[in-house]
Length: 171
Image 1 (cartoon, one colour):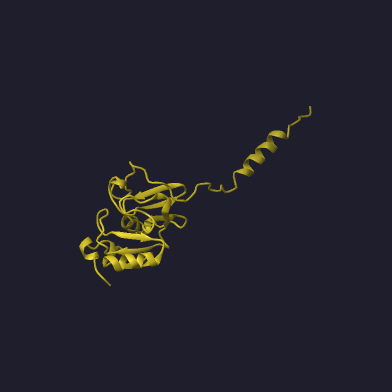
Image 2: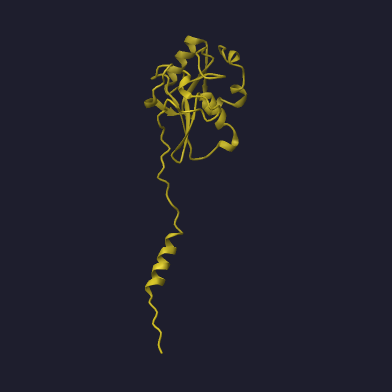
């Protein structure tokens, strides 16, 4: 007696297994998203929109971590366990936004932004970092308020942990 085996199940199973070996491409975007009235800060849990000044967000694989200030976002990011290569970091451009209600259509790359510390402007708890896309605008704000201009790479945890009153100095 001859046995006949169908090759279709074997062929189908082979094709199915071959498809399992291919890496999946992420379709999640790291573009910034809008802040909403009920959003809470990833660090302190406070309602983000309860504070004036620029906010921050970290986007990873389409998921947003939102912060009530640029300083809280950068402080979180400076902790080594939070560094992820493909994350997008964003802050409000205060050269194109009102201080009390930053405009989410003007979120910029936090790593290329220019910051002003020591402005005396009110923000969330701790050090207030005003963020700008245009360096000339940042320098003008610093000159007008007695603040000083910093680049992202010049901001460290020691700077962020100083008392808010200490951050107001002309340099």
